Length: 116
Image (cartoon, rainbow, N blue to C red; front, side, top):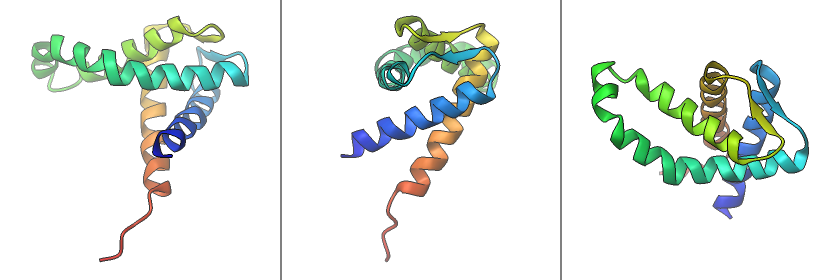
């Protein structure tokens, strides 16, 4: 159940990101759903490898290169999904930032709070 909620949250964040960030386009609702799934898979499988490979650069730039790694993962997801396009690396970085922030906020809002 948690997976489905996270998938829906990512899809909504991606739709908002496509609306806000110039250069990101999602052709249809089906492409949006598939893009959210592929983005989740890329973030789970490819991004940790990229983070490990780019760790020296990330440390050297005090973590700013992490934004580029997220943008590359976002662009890779767009490259894999027909109907989901990203115009440039700048658009990918902006889209990854918007989707990340919105997903975090929505997940926080949807997570039940335990009363202690």
